[in-house]
Length: 449
Image (cartoon, helix red, strand yellow):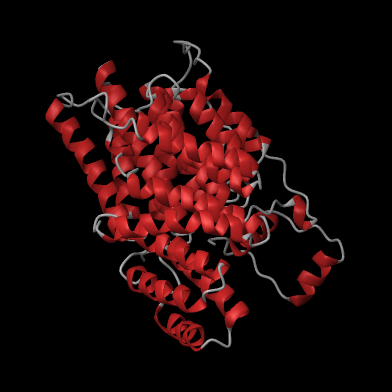
């Protein structure tokens, strides 16, 4: 993880178990290790260790809500990410935040930023001004490049182009350190927000969870500087999805409610429908059936209004198609089934909706990762219905897609699904055979070297 002066052996671990408190960065490294292996946030304190006191400004998410500081932080973080090791270890100050430590700083997204004091020093070096300012065609090119990166992510997964996105983000922050007209600055901040969100999403997709969260937080700061509340709502929805993945549905619900409140005036029906679908996912993982069903209905009803106003939509929300709507709602019912002890009632609700999502994604070559995830989701529904042969047939299709995309999220879900199948139906020939194939063909890591 880049801490070359750290080594360990069995006697040292035994002393930790006996109560000895190791010095930093060992507690932080252990926290990140257990969090990665368990797929949930494991705080230093939960390991029986004491965390070093850190000021809020370096704790990862509680950052100053001001434009110059936002630019300096994005520039520094993206540069470190480009320079350091592929595992994404960016020092002992980087860790996963959860609970009030995460939610409370994000609530300040909607608080008006006080005017800067002209006497305050600049937070970092400012590059010399260019002889000419950015033209509209140059800004258009930056925005279209971001859209292209987003399309590549949907097709190929987060592992293949992540560093390219981080590099582009760093370039945009260099432009923001130069004097720009206000309108240009807002467009650049919006571009930085979209790139930072995409870098976070790609990091999340390949399993670099602390990196992902930091990029999401920085993206939200940039969206505030751009004055784009719908984009901020979308970024919060990505943070909410990560919290569900990490087993923190309560935090996910807080974030999604903040997103809904912040985007209540400017968000399009497509964005609002996506937020309702994510609200349903949070409620499902909390084991609240009635609220899950209500949120699912709201997502469906709101999605029916998509396109009726004729207004153009931003590129970042165009991914939320009928296929995505069905996939999210089906996963909500599937999650409910697991939380309720493998309930056949909720599994039966999930099956037709998931089947519809699979059918729609099968026709969409631009969203192969989503196709794989919904094939896996359908396989889990068949396992809930005790239909291992159908489950393995779908998992085999998902394996074919997984090998063409770099997504640790897809790989992990596929492994977990086959582990469940092997545990419950290990004597079924199809399950045994596919488990053997999976061990041989699925890559161990999705992160590109």
